[in-house]
Structure formats: structure tokens, C-alpha cells
Length: 241
Image (cartoon, rainbow, N blue to C red):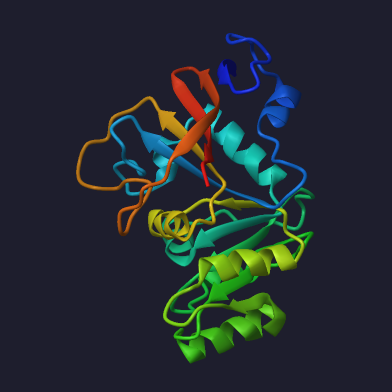
């Protein structure tokens, strides 16, 4: 990938990054826990293609960074609706770099495929709240184990508490892949440290489908990194807390 901008100023713009340099470019701070959110968008702002799934606007460059961010993560935090809608890829035992999957559901409903989703670092997690469906939560405890169901918040998941619970489990590098409602709530809760956004060189048209959903927020960000490959532009942005 070709470097367009780096806040460090090194290497020089125009440099081509190999795998090792790309890994270094996306490294998270080593002195604190870090939560970043990764999305892909069309040039006209759609988070999905015509089929309603983000996979149809993925590009090879986006997949390269998507895969890298997963390898760098300890845990992937994702909304239950996204797991159901996207036909979510499992994090399998045979991948030594696979992070733990943490599914966020206000209703306490664990998507069926998550039962088979494990990583070398442990079982998948369900993050829910006190108002969740009791039967759903009990099913999740039976499938995942009681210790792998995190309850935080009353009417909806307390995302500050959820992040703290993940940190307490030793997860330092945290990655969220949405969906838009979870991302909007995370921004509103002030728990996001970094936004990674890929612009795919395509136009989709149609109705709404931005990378955030929910009440408006006012969050300033600082560019850390811009890359380009075959028309795909990839950005790394730090949230200004």
C-alpha cells in the first residue's frame, strides 16, 4: 500500500509499505488499553452494498487491513444484529491469532452461530444488561458458561462498564466492527479511541446506511494515517478525548 500521510512523518509520503511496515503503522499504544472501530464505506457514504451487506463493498486492500486489525486485537466487539445480518465469520480455534468475540445485545439474545465461535484465548462473550430477556441470558450462560456473560447497565448495555469489564479480563487491544448503532452508542459513551475507515472506490446510491446510527454526537478526530491501493483509501483517525 502507498503511504499518503503519517502523523510521524516517516516513512515519506509515496512510500510503499510492506507487511511489516503496515503492521507497525497500525500498532496500538503499548502503555494503555485501546479501543478502535473499523468500518468500510462507499464514496457516497453507504456502509453496505446493494445486497445490504458490507462484504459487497470490500476490496482487497480493505480485507488486508481488516485481517491485520483482527490479528492485532485481543477481542472483537460487535453488535448481535451485525452478527446475524453479516453472516459473521467465525474466529476459529485453528487460527493462533484469533481474538475473542464479544457480542453486545441489549436483549440478551445470543446469535446461534456464536455458540461455535471460540479462539485460542477463550470462549466467546455475551455483553448484555439487566433488562435483557431472562430466558435468553440463561441460554447464553448455558452455551458460553456463566463467567462469559457480562451484565452491565440497566435498560441498555453500559458501554463504559462493558469496556471496563473487558479490560479487567486482560484485553488491551480492543476492536469493534460495528454495526452502526453500536458505533454511534460507543461514540456517545466516549469509549472509542480510534476510528479506522476504508473508502471503497464505488457508489451505491439508495437510502440511509451511514457508519453511525442513533442520536447525534459531536466528536473531533485527528488523522494519524492515510493509505491508498488501487483506488481504495484507508484512514486511521484518533478520537480527541
